[in-house]
Length: 286
Ligand code: AMP
Image (cartoon, rainbow, N blue to C red; front, side):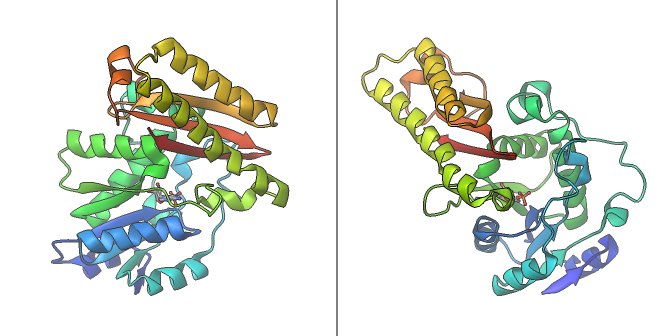
């Protein structure tokens, strides 16, 4: 694997490549990330990964400084996956001058759910992804459904800017008890790690109740609101601090209307909640 730190070296490595498949990450790689590398290899060649902890997407009180940085381990994992180039720029390379040109997602997608609780988060994400796409110029790029809203925002950005990169979604990889893999899981204490399973458990309960309601054809918009608030209560009674548990339409992440509830495969339930000091997100398609 070629490890490059500068944009010019990256461009030199990729000159003439027409089917580049790209997987952007912030490192501290786990099986979820590695599944994206494998999916990328099915859709293009060479596979290029990036590792860059993007300051722009962290709020002032978030974990930018303590975000786990494990480059040597990450390199070993990527080499095993047959990744061709790792692009690992430092901040001076990515942001040699303040990045005051930004990509701003539409408010109805960028300021809801994650965007409501992490103001500016998606501006940071889309700006760095746009910049990385300019550097790599990939034909395809793989993003995880774990970050469901991010995936949708990136897809729409590519469509609106006519970026010739196909966005491939990857399923969420989970631990054996159901906890979605995440670099932030390492912040959990032993007890919190046991408790953390309740996030995916609660999402399953929501999905089951919605499906039962759909099977009986009687579920209403009010029922959905009640199911959401009952789920939030379950977590909060266990000591979690929940930002949201919301059932939304898969197509645009808006709250479902009566006609959306009548059809199968239209919905997704998304959640963000704090287990101790660690904020976890997860979602489940219904
Ligand atoms: P991150 O390093 O957290 O920025 O994530 C990089 C990419 O990996 C994003 O597209 C994430 O959605 C994806 N990802 C993170 N966790 C998982 C997981 N458990 N399963 C699948 N993809 C994931």
